[in-house]
Image (cartoon, one colour):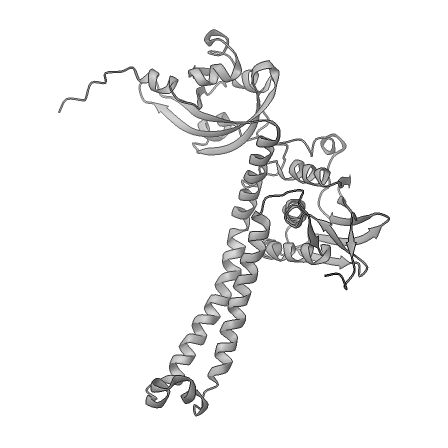
Length: 380
């Protein structure tokens, strides 16, 4: 059977795409670039082909550190993985833009050489890019928490199923109960109401878990909610409990009793707690790690402290932790966006984040939440 003859040049298909496409060899050199990539970078073909990818995209003189960023040569060519990440690249006018990269391996059987094929979608910059960063980080966190959430929901579902089985046993072949269910229950020797009560309780448990996830997924906005800070922190920690239990580490709470209700962004606060709390849980040692969550009032602010007994952060790195994409955590779920997004959220809401760390002892984050308005228990 004859192969179909294309009436067009395959390169025209790639050049017609709205996403950038490049091919990188094992020496970090770009061997192909489509028209969109060239246009986004504002460079002619001869200034890209044969040049190093890290020079073109990052303005660097050496390859990216694979401990800090996902590198196509390291992950795709050398390890044969398929990678999807968000990076900051430099485009026209030397401005940094956010790009979503999908990279997959390609093997040239005629030469025996391996390549990485990258498809790059420009996310833009400014508030639009920030929104997409935020979404990417939240999806990353929800994916990381998925196992724990599934476990938390599976337990009550098993209890509901067991209750249904017990009710079936109670009913059995009892014709009176089958014909007149609710009246017949009064004469049954089984405590069927107990099983209905258990089912209701477990359904409420499932609803509570999904409610917490929905609050996390809400977009952060300036529109204010009446927020109970202690309650928001406590409910956010419940989503992290399974992650902590897998590492056999302790989460300790110390919430002040005099924390007022405030006007703030509920979803924004929960996302900050989840971002920094998840980082702390990931960096402490299995079996001996402790993460403290503390709240207190300090002047016109509520201070929320997140303290871990991990290895701490070096003075050189502590200056970079709020930079997008900076991460030394090898967890595949880590996007390097959690801390910069948390800082951006707090700044937009009139708050701030401070960090102190000592290598070998641990790290303390101080999240300062402004008390713009507070409400008494009598307020409607």
